[in-house]
Image (cartoon, rainbow, N blue to C red; front, side, top):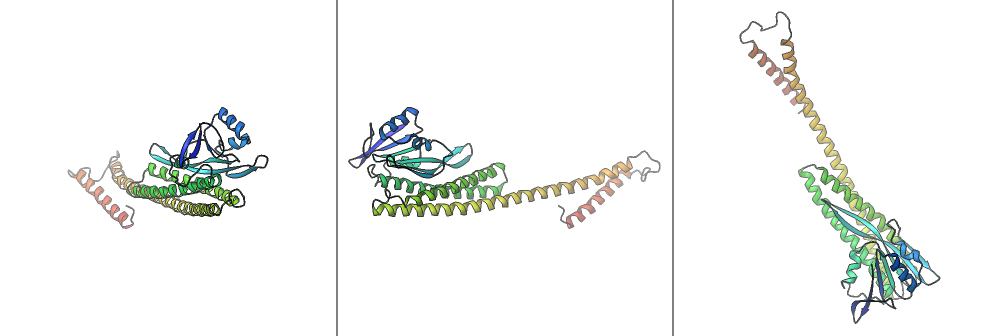
Length: 313
């Protein structure tokens, strides 16, 4: 889907054609839309298709022939699957051209929606370099927002694990840990892109643009540190609960083994008196059976006392 936006009279409006100072947003575009954009902007088609590959890495690639620059960064997103929440990233392509700015992605983003919904008050489509920096800043801020959500969810899951050890909570922790790995890898790649942007003249057109880029790099570094801290905490939590589960299993097996030993004592005694032999003790005694029961209970009691002293229960 292709949507063209233009800032007119301090409002963001949708226009019909690509012209100077507009913003072209492509979300999972068709081949016809790609050719249409390429026919007007005369940019490399591979620039447009770069962000449509989910495995595309973050990078900057200039095209000296027409003065366009491709910036690919990873954007975080969240998905809800049954009872679990999954965090991951996808590539967003930002193409800077002499005519306008073009964004390409496979899915709609919270970052893009913040601009289309006029949530960014200082956003104007014709301020191309400022728009790119605002996009990067919003992406870094979104990472921080999702990282705080991950920390809160991990704390809630940890409290649930204290009550009962269930596979569902363990799986949720694994999903959060996997999301932190994605975030950490993407943030480091985005950091390299932002540092390279400092060396490009089109970004440093105005002093406030350079300041905004430096603030964006600071936010991204903070997100990297938070992701590493949360990842270490979550990994330690997973190891701790794995040890607790293993210890609980050992306790349960020890208890069952102790109970099995106690239950085997009456079985052995009953088997001995049940043999077809002559002169069995208490065979002629009218209260022989109660005596045997008392003997069995006595031996079991002594064995249980001994095992309790050895903390086998």
